Length: 300
Image (cartoon, rainbow, N blue to C red):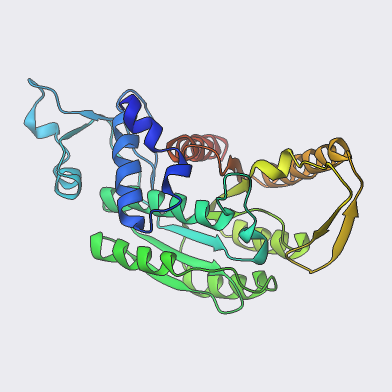
């Protein structure tokens, strides 16, 4: 990956780009190039060990399906395991509207990341699907291929934040649609009613699925500036609270403890927990997710 390409993967550069297809294709192309020295085996949106074709390599080792989808030659150096469907569960609750100092909302970042991950699935010929966590979930049924990916992009582009009372309905829809062991990737900030979210996670985790929970932070989550007494409104419940001037250290400790307990709860149930930040380059976030899932498979 060139330095110029790496700089462009900075999410701030995508703020005024409405074309999700361009974002995903651009990021994933650089991501694949950066994987040539990696050995990340698995299924779903994960890549095995690939590297660019070099003169002298046997033509029989070229992944022709990947060439047909990317117009680039790659050598496959490991066989994939049995593929599982990849289901992406998008949190569209009101707190996902939150944006840090970079003006990137958590929903924006979740959209970009999910489109990049499904692009990986599409390039490998894997099946993928999407459901949103809302009272009336948006659904993209399982499928594969470029046309199916385009349908997912169109649905993702239209997503907006809705009511916070949604995980029970999402659980019902998930139980109906995900009818065989699958990989389930949840993109959320984890700020919903904790009991409902945990019940949803317990439900899907008890059905031989491989579950990854991506916890999305932004710059204000850990570095909240308090130069004066400030009133805050809970985007999920509407409740208002006042934090005293210069109390950011107390807030920082509270948030850190909250996330640590959340991650411990997930890990204790063999759910891979990955923290990402809206300031984080998308290729870095993708690699963290794949590594976390690889560790999960090793433990299971």
